[in-house]
Image (tube, rainbow, N blue to C red):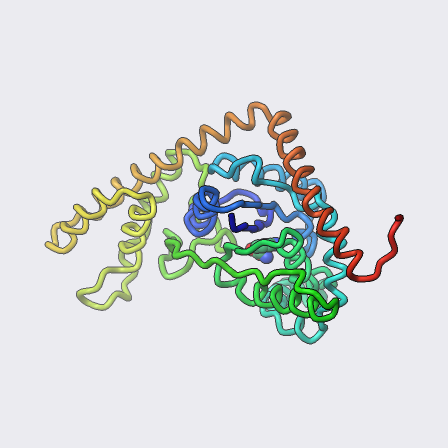
Length: 333
Ligand code: TRP
């Protein structure tokens, strides 16, 4: 069976854009691949953060992923497998300064920091982040990495690093991981349907995946349908977004029947919104309930993930033994 690895930063609450864009796909891949998914807390140290908050967000992300259907045996916490950083160090030594300088995410993130504060502290960790990501992937010899297009450059770097390691140590040791770009629905902001749903845009711009029914209903109800910039005869971005949402939730029956109404000019936006809200609430209510169940027994869930992390760690340790051997590091034997 081919293997998959992916990671997500513990950023707080997931929104429906995260779910349809990535997590849903993670859940589905579990049927056909050996999957490992990690909450990458080491990566979250690369930007300014609060220690108490980080630990809380990490566990919170674990609970949310489980509630979405990620299997506990496939989920672990990156820092509970410290071998990732050990391999990261070794890979640093086969990565050139120049190739890291070309990473656009580093430029974006450091610009973002400088925007809020001209003297912002930019850590070496932020610069080195893609090498740790390569270690996350290579340490498990993962075949496929489901990611968004924004990670394409990091994946290419991972392959270059694998190649250089293999050349330098004279063996086809690391395989070349391939990104898995699955077609996923792009969900836009309900308040500004010309932009992707995102937390950084502010409260009205995202719908919490574990949101309370009333709030979700309100957000759909107040979704922008006429942006004023739609050419005559075309569907506006906001209306398209609601249809897309319905399709993403799998309610093709309502989708198609409302689309007929649209085509015949008889669609009432209030109907579209009501159906969309009902459909979305139907999908997310079980998630919210499962999350509550999981949180009712936090200790047991934490223990389960600590155990799965320990099992994953054994695999990583096996790789590290081989890597230490290949790279000329000292051994106790
Ligand atoms: N860099 C990824 C992101 O920002 C997260 C990530 C870390 C990751 N390690 C990974 C993704 C390994 C895939 C594989 O979204």
